[in-house]
Length: 485
Length: 96
Image (cartoon, rainbow over all chains, first blue to last red; front, side, top):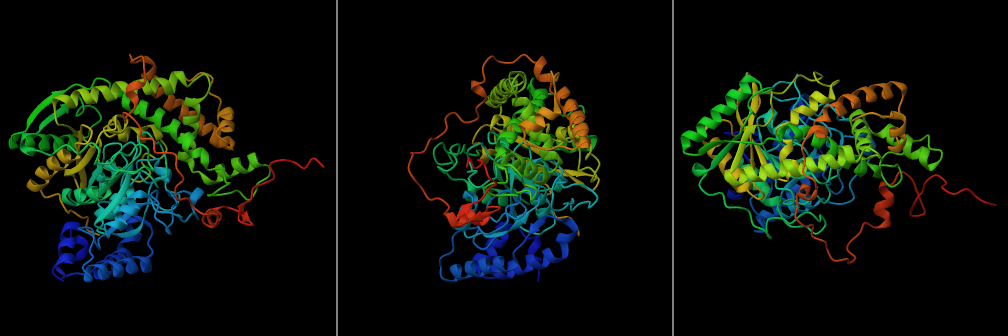
């Protein structure tokens, strides 16, 4: 075989499938063989039903043969983070709480992928209930960075990013509440996009913090990321915040070489590793050389983003996770006495340490006597941060920063210091607080470890983010990169 | 900002049972995290939270019945069920 199938992009695989030089079965068999030799090293997947995958592939090949192919994703495997429901597959959120749960229904994005002919390919590891930045909080297994197996892949969509970097699958879905798509994408050298709040339905996404959560595409190239984004975006009445792309229309990309790029003042200063700053500055120089207008912008409340996020997110999490009471689904303690004892024991046995920490924090910031000082002030700070970002984006098309201040750290290095781990998200959090689209694009290496830059745009400016990423990607060698394993 | 922090009360509100070691650990970590939140207390912030919403208006769907999971699907994922219903510990004592 001229090219190992696991190294190819989804777009190229789609072209071969359309040309009849490849079948979905042959592709899935090759990826399953890759899974059998690589997944134990990387730990990206928590579950892969090989018989089901091959049955889906055969159905796809039959559709194509009958002239009923469903588009560019027909026959292409897409792996899915384990907090997004796929009927008949586990939905564990990498938690003991949901260890035995098999989803009885499809999420909206799973329906969209089926309608596009994609293969729903396995379940990807994550921080428990999407709470974390290293995937070390998974109750199922550790996931390692394919570029250095002693290091974390990022999180919470660590399995989604690691699977791409390890050549286990060409496309994956993640979810992003404060950076959970973009931060692991940066650490693993892949592309990750958090769409505008409301562009993609969260129906069937297990809720963490509902005013922040978004599902988004991850891939090894901008072209593939766009392919998946287009398949996922659609209005859905089952998520009352989802307007999809049809009502308002995405902003046209325009000429990427004429983009106005804002560099937030001070963002490349303290706390950013020199190699990360150098890679991001080189990206800025590249855009300037292409003709883009580069200017410095002020975001004076940026320092409030992390505390604001951790008040809002934990408050919403403490409410959302109230549903896990051992009654309707999920873990029920065997030591149940009264109903309250059953609920307390079930939650205490089912949740891991980070989830408990965030529930306690969220309970506190919402509790009587403290809600005004914490939760309401955080909402006011959120309003201020959002206004500053929208104001800055009235003068430029995109804001460019590092995605993460430092390259991937070693497994266990920050496990005992949650506050340090929370600061990993300092550049990614504001896009969630303001509901803005944002993307991480690979832009270099720090030693052998990938580095990404981060673009944030105005609502519905996904096409501009992708165009900017495409311009950079076309001139550099970071698309389709995979770790040697 | 964090005066009055009571880990036992919080655990009760959150329906969590914590060991002594967990209480000590979470108390220490939460105090550290809440100290970081001090920036919110010191900040000059807008008076209203109206602009904190990231969608201008939520689309309320019409109040019409739609597809639902049937009893069989619901009880299949329940921790315990009997006769097509989810079973739970006794909630109300017999008065007889």
